[in-house]
Length: 394
Ligand SMILES: Cc1ncc(COP(=O)(O)O)c(C=O)c1O
Image (cartoon, rainbow, N blue to C red; front, side):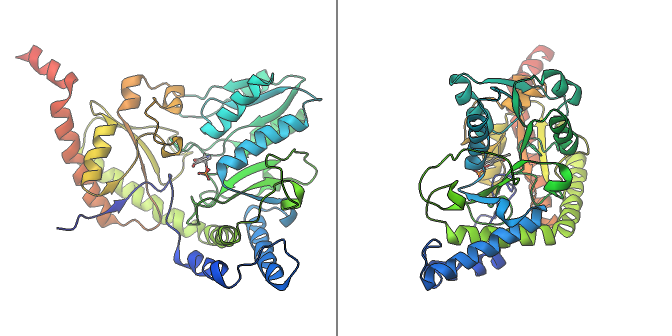
């Protein structure tokens, strides 16, 4: 019997949509030129790269010359943090970020600390929101960069980016945001929002993997992370990934064009799922902000259930979800995000992430709710906590 498959891990990655794939295919064999070659093949490839740059710029309210292609969100984050810190080190050596950032930000900051930079990691409240007063409190004369993510990849909480950017600018500090999860899910206009530097990635918005971009506002100074050729205005060496860039450009265009329709659909599916889950399963809580949160992302703590075991049982039924964040490369450490919002080790271990995408259906969700109800009941019956209680009662 063929096992049924349901994909509910859209925050980890998405499939490449057909319209995106259709635009990419010719770049593998007909328009395959090197975008930096001056011959006709190169010019053709270059035109495709330029078109993608324009599409992405339009999607975020930027100018085309402010978009720099990278290999993805991780590289964009590394580049933003290291590139700005190194460029501005004469001005100061203090950076402010938060304790709930993606590991590509946190690890870049830790690497800078080894070089002598000072980093403040702001706490988040129980809903995952960064406190503005606390941010202001930690700003110093030598603060050169503030980096706060737009939306969190584990709990979905969306930050008050515009207010944070304004606070940074009042003190003349550069503001970077990791918008890898937020791009395509919320409206971005970098100029209106006061964002100086922003990381985005293609594979979260139905584009190909291994490609992303860093938006760098005109006038912001940054050192390269990858040295090499003259690509990307001499700031990011390496032969351009034309298929990836073309796919990313198309995916961005579609993501912004269809954002309202998709968000409406995803919100409907999420509400349907939660209603059905509430009817069949007891003792679970949703983490993150109650409404200032990505629509499709649900971080759920099931009391007395080991998240890993639940994910495994669901996987056996063909259902793909994740424990914590798949972006950490499958690490089994307790999530730093769940820890930062106040979950204890047991609660963190009892948490899974379910992320709904635009292709999911109510019928799929019915199947998933039944599977969760059955699995949770099974795991709770085996749970040492429950067993202990039972023994005492006996
Ligand atoms: C918030 C956030 N930032 C950065 C990344 C890394 O992006 P990429 O996978 O494109 O390297 C991810 C997930 O992968 C993410 O969720």
